[in-house]
Amino acid sequence: MVLAYLILPLIFSVFIFSCTKPHSNTNISSSEKSDSLAAFKKPGNNITDDSLICIIGVGDLMLGSNYPSSVSLPPDDGKFLLDSVNDIPGYADIVFGNLEGTFLDKGGKPKVCNTPDNCYSFRTPESYCEILKSAGFNLVSLANNHSNDMGEEGKESTIKTLEKNSIRYAGYAELPYTIFEINGNKFGFTAFAPNFASQNINDLSNAVKVVSELKKKCDIVIVSFHGGAEGSSAVRVPKKKEIFLGEDRGDVYEFAHAVIDAGADIVIGHGPHVPRALELYENKLISYSLGNFCTYGKFSTYGVQGIAPLLKVYLDKKGNFVKGNIYSYTQKGRGYPVHDPELRAAKLIKELTGKDFPDTRLSINENGEIKLGEAD
Image (cartoon, rainbow, N blue to C red):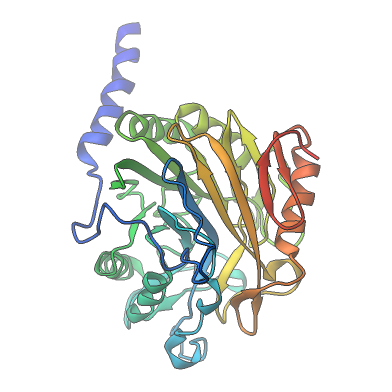
């Protein structure tokens, strides 16, 4: 009987990874870095380091919705939405964001909400995905409370549209991870949320299994989570389970540490719609929330919810954090990022990191530069 209890979990773990195929797009080049978001046009400022792996991450992305009407779509088909993020110094292997909603021109079955007053469904025209591609995005999370907004039709259209635009993805329960290669480095990506149709952030044993299996196959494992409470009062990491609107939004602190112990090299969080602290754990970087980045027409961008950080980090070949930078943006108008001369994102994340993780080995200055060292 004891032997049976030991063997059954192993069989189950093998079953998951044998029946769930990692997806990839054969049209995506495996030898080129993403250079649209990361290309700095001015001569002499093209900072590259081929010995390091560079990852750019932002928070929530929702480029406009035509459901229930087109009133929440931007003018000029949204072509201007990401114009201000094309001058980040250097290049990046990965440019990542959390995709809220679906890419679907029309139709779909809107989700049924338990709390209609706090529930929205997003349906973004399929052509808008080209905005992400043109900006350099090559990886998105689909694990969040809007991934099932338009039912199976919406999910299928989203997958088809992302693949057409050479953007990798993961996070649906049936598509929990993806494996791909860039510049000779094999990456594994997986994403979790407390929501229906996503990998469950509260199933910690499954998260550990998925990450540990990815680490056996990949050089660098990236984990994304959508979790925690929401709103301007949710900027702190409470280090306990968070309940919001009656929903169990997970213990993101416990989750992040568990997946790093299982083999994750970087953990990128989102969900609270506000920035949260950074932490260095076992030489791996955790971003507990990157807030909203480009959320047109349907999200509150008032106050701290309008602060839009862009995180750029460098890892060594073992996935250990080396250095990074927080680029400060703020959402303008109905919700698109512009440079913030007041550097509020960098200053806020510096402050929150000092409060929530005073002993972490990160030094952040007000310009957003992140270095290894004693916390200041």
